[in-house]
Length: 170
Image (cartoon, rainbow, N blue to C red; front, top):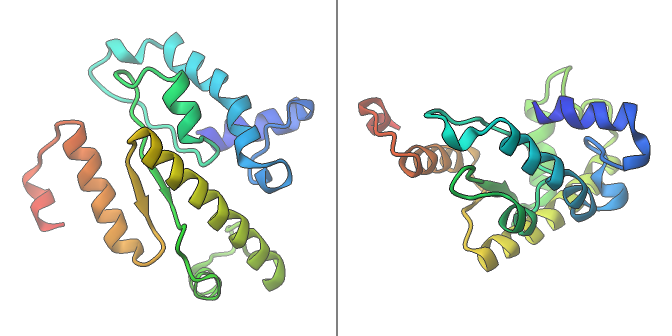
């Protein structure tokens, strides 16, 4: 959902500098500062805090500091992920091995992909530091994607009081 929203901002209002996939040009912190007011109003307007179900907002442009300062944490929880300790060459290899024709990485040359991974690694380090500072959950996907995915899924379910018998198999 947020990819579509940020792509719409990028296309319709480029002067806002809210970009989807181009944060390395102006920095993830600046994009987060611009998106946080929209996101805070979006979840407040819909009164999600009054509902029994939760909305999932999948976005990488949100910094923990902005979430902590501007979002009602009783209403909306955030779970941060990244790869602050990733081996860059291994990440390139993994991406190339698993990418499909639809992936944004496909048209990139290896050098450009390496540069983007370096930026995402740096951004992951910033996010991890802020999560420590604000006591927010951070999941490191640097080593094992499968293990980290299981950890975050279990954490989210427990954090939201969902206990399922099927999860014991995970």
